[in-house]
Image 1 (cartoon, rainbow, N blue to C red):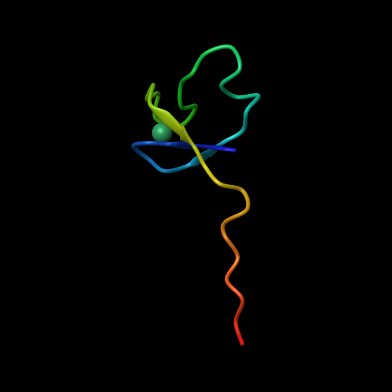
Image 2: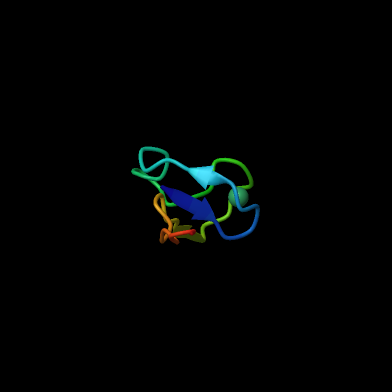
Length: 43
Ligand SMILES: [Zn+2]
């Protein structure tokens, strides 16, 4: 899962397979988002 740097929307890997570009705002800057954030054990 990737995220757009500008609009912060989630981009699927297949969306940026051909061109690294946000399908929402057209930005070319995306970063890899974490699908599974670090878990914190709550007691
Ligand atoms: Zn965007």
